[in-house]
Amino acid sequence: MSNFDTTYVADLSLEDCRSLMQHMLNNSDWKISQIDDSHFTLKEPRSIIGTLATGASSYPAQIEVTIQAEQGRTCFVIHGSNFGIGPIQSHHVKSEVNEFLSTVQGLIRGTQNMRREIENKLNQGVLCPTCGNAISPGTRFCPHDGTPIARECAKCGSSNMPGAQFCSNCGAAL
Image 1: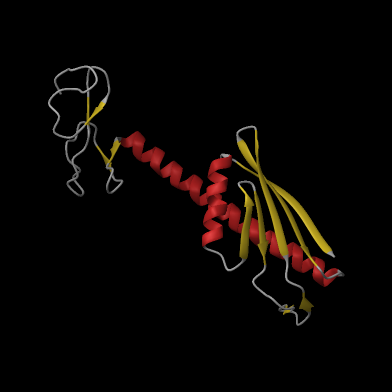
Image 2: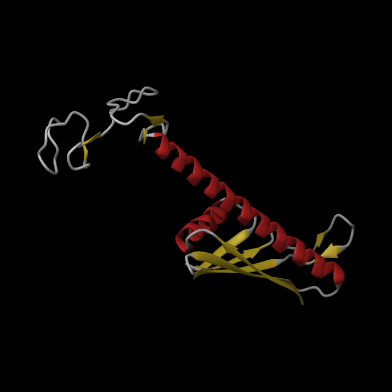
């Protein structure tokens, strides 16, 4: 049996990484089964012996993934295997594990970039709940799509429904 093991530590919460794995469950050609919240098994989408680009035959790979919290980050423990032996089988398992890991890293980078974009927009002002564009604090309607924006109380900082005349938290006039 050919095996390849690796680990990867992501700067995302365990819950975010579980969501990414769930996304992969729903959008992959691999046959993926979820054992529980932290254990997944991925089977290569070939039911019979496949042929590599080199012309050599390989057995389908199986990847077992465990995700676990580690000091505010998430560790992916990845074990790949197939039923073949020898350098061709070992190379195939390693390349499938690395392809999976590359996909995970890409999803994590995308998630981190999206968070940075949102943080930048928040630093620029308020975000419209409908279109997500930054708008100036105190704006009553989104200039991009006309959505009414919740009004913030100047006295206590509470968010109030559009059109409210008085703060629902402290009673101050808005």
